[in-house]
Image (cartoon, rainbow, N blue to C red; front, side):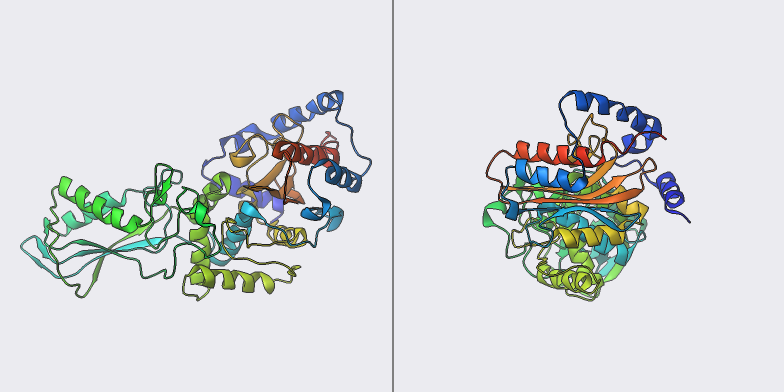
Amino acid sequence: MEKTEKLFVTLQQTKPLFQPQRWIAGNMTKRILNLLLLLVVAAGWAFASSPQEAVDNFVKRSGVRPESLAVKITDLSEGKLLASHNSKAPLVPASIMKSVTTAALWEEAGADFRFHTRVYIDGVLDMGILRGNIIVEGNGDPSLHSNAEPYGSDIFKEIAETLRDMGIMQVDGSVIVDESAFPGPSRPVSWAKADFSTSYGTGFHALNYRNNVSGNKAVENPGAIFARHLTSRLNEMGIPVHGKSMSEGRRTQIFDHLSPPVDEIMRSCMMRSDNLFAESMFRAYGKIRGGSGSAADAAGKSMERWGKAGLPFEGVNIVDGSGLSRSNRVTADFMTGMLTEMSGDATYASFFPLAGQEGTLRRFLAGSPLEGYIAMKTGSMKGIQCYAGYKLDDDYVPTHTVVIIMNEITGSRDVAKKAAEKMLLEIFGEGEEEE
């Protein structure tokens, strides 16, 4: 099946999470946008004579030192390098690391993957009374009662209904959360301590609940809050949990809560740049590959996978899945190789926000001839601005890879972003005219 046919089938099957504009706009809107090219030229956007000249101009006007900046643009159909700068330099990727994490788990686990949260009881059932505990085994699901899509189902209601169906109307013991599936610290050791209290710096746990945040603050023990809330919810629903101290006995599984499909989790992660979602996928990948599930182990499994892939790997260092660590290093060569390897997968390409329309790329190239034709993951930290993704055709099939990594930005971030927009318009803005 050709790429375009594959993409058409994928789009027909894709749920409308975060992307109604992507598939509704269609080719007509895209082609209308091309007429805006004349306005762009009238506004003073001069086109470079070649892609390499456009990149060279970008380096000069970005406000970033040349050695702290990398660019690589390739043509996928011909396997041809169009333009590059400093493509072998190891630089901090920030959140474009999420595209690497997503690619690894998507290839390894596929569309059938779900996070499982299994529920057990122990003790004996005596005339509707459970003389034991309810044990909830966390396995890394980041979506339990999430405040962002995909929301998933209400696990509290599901547990209550299961207990009722079993005839359990009272629990003598307690709600116990088992987090043994993912050991080690909740955050990679290289994360900045200043980020620990923030919502974006919350740690990953075997049992994640409500995004592990309260307001804009990280929650350090989401499992304890989950147990308290489940106990309260069961009490409200007429199944009192008395909380007596009872030693754990032999477990009997009564329920298995499944997360939403992993592609929905991935799309949400890429659109919103969610660190918890990315770390959950990162740890899950390590576990699937036979590791312990710790952050350090997941990093080792990821390095092993990409190191064996035949991609340019010199200088690459992967320490987390989200890109929050400043110890991560990638090169434009490596990112291009990864994107090229994944370019034939229509579902993976659909995870990237469309320029001017979706997610963190909503304002980038908005109203330009490239709106809807560029799909990239963004990455931003103090002094860092990165982009990695694809140039698309009218059928949303990747035609080019695009990697832009800017470190040590000391001037205006907006100037750097505008320079990147101008470079892409100079390279691709004239290439979308109708035949």
